[in-house]
Image (cartoon, rainbow over all chains, first blue to last red):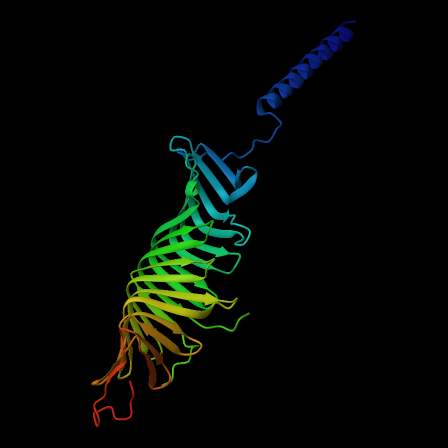
Length: 191
Length: 142
């Protein structure tokens, strides 16, 4: 009889240990959580929002005025500025002019005024073949005006123009070079 | 050497205004333009292009126009250059000087690739020519 009691006591002990093991495993798993943690990069102090493949379109009365795209955009709420990298600004022109596409390494987008300050290999190409390049350029959205204080170089077919300081009206495609202008007009056969 | 209208036209100035729609480029302030051996100085120069190939169709100079070409010099208040024909129309007290020889009139048609000009008079500006026979420039007509 004694033996039977020992066996009963032993089995009871095993049951208790097994339950404890199960509870412990459950608790451990809950603590670690099964969902893998996403690697979230810590944002620099002055960046409130960071976006990839940024794209913004400005329209007026349903008509697209311009398009701003960038590989990366970092918004600073305090300054209300967005820093852009690998930038493409497309300004819609009147039908007879077509679009003007401007690319640059970097840009600063002023959210309040919607002005875009582009820098680093700034290049503009119109659908009619007019090309220009500068180191810095600003797009004043409210006046549809491109301005630069730097040397700007134009090429249009065989003709080349350059000068220091520019104002370029994107809607009429009239532009002014303010200083130190030189130009070469090469005759070409009509295409 | 004759200047072909196809030679590049090089221009320098203080500033420039360009109109893509009208295909004009207006240079202002101490304008200097070169094409081949011809040099033109003026206050304001309007270069007009035409056609898809942006061919030079007209070059117009306003104010203190001075044209130098070899031993020939022409001056006037206004000039229109036709690159295709190689001709410059000068007015506004136009004058062409070759050495000591001088011609003046109301309008002077200056042929770039020919050593000749046509001088037209007007009611107030009769044609005048001062030619020094046997001068240094024998054979070279203004």
